[in-house]
Length: 192
Ligand SMILES: [Fe+2]
Image 1 (tube, rainbow, N blue to C red):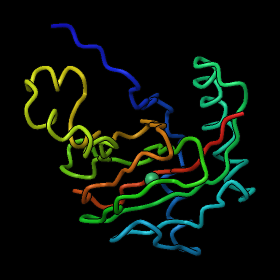
Image 2 (tube, rainbow, N blue to C red):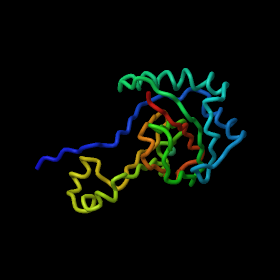
Image 3 (spheres, rainbow, N blue to C red):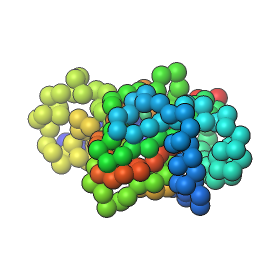
């Protein structure tokens, strides 16, 4: 029997190389004002990093916004705006609780420092149709579920330079990090 998935969740991904010096600059940010909005065992800058002129001029414009604009042009969004931006660091065992990014179209995360060989620290997306599709999730042939991406949650391992953009309404969390100094820049994007 043929099966066609309808209305998938779209996870955009790209590689945006991390510029020299950014990991060290995060040490400076860590010494400034930090918060814990969704994290435990780590730190987050306030979510208006896009207003930090030094950061914008030295790192954001050339090393992130230009390559991101290039990537987004391939999916033909007419225009987009960066509404919120922050960097978070996790120590070993640090995590982010399940959350969404209200008032935005897309949320994104860009891994600045991730140790590929370390266990843990994956971002985990939760199936928004988990309740409605609970019987399919239970009974459907595992190979079919795998091919269609039908699961309770889907995890992606962080890698330095990996950029992920996903619907801001999609619940996600970060599993306990297996390494110290896991660094990611995250934010909100509105389209149009
Ligand atoms: Fe998030």
